[in-house]
Image 1 (cartoon, helix red, strand yellow):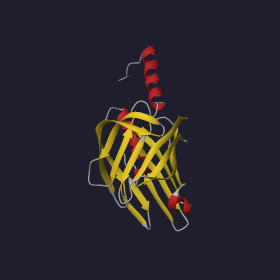
Image 2: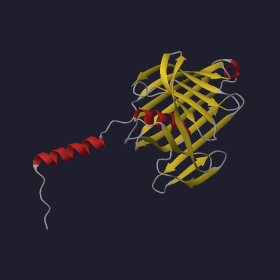
Image 3: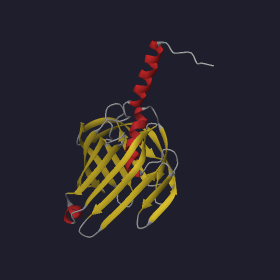
Image 4: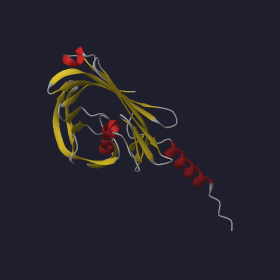
Length: 235
């Protein structure tokens, strides 16, 4: 039995839909953002975040931090993080992640590799750890991108599968409402998003629909680290 032919007009519409899906805009645009770093309330350096398209539909997210004051400057401390991923279902699905920390006293390397054919993750951090992936698994460096993209899409609660040392851990975040935030880049009415499970503390302030980057990030732990937006430019 032969299937009926599509009329030329309908065929054109179908092809347009397919082409549109293939070249759909990513959830977030490319950007460069610069931040002031503070530790326990004291300025210690600067960070630059860059999101850029790569080859074959991949994206690269890079963070470069360096000490410019206090002990961080004295030790010449610097950190470079590079994530390669693809947008999948509005989330940055991991491909690779590399972390490098250099100082006069210490050096540290860490990497994460995703094999989506075998659905496995390999973490190399003082030894290799192999474990099963979950659909949409990402690594912690791209968490702010996942939250920013989700807020732009109208989400308020997030359950994100994150590759940690030896397993995939579901981390939970939720929007807490709007707050006025003052940072070097200006004053913003921003949505505060907090981590809601028992893991390491995180608060980020985002401006959905206007900026694809957080205007402020607070990471709570033994030493509280704060990033405050100084400048932003689209690429």
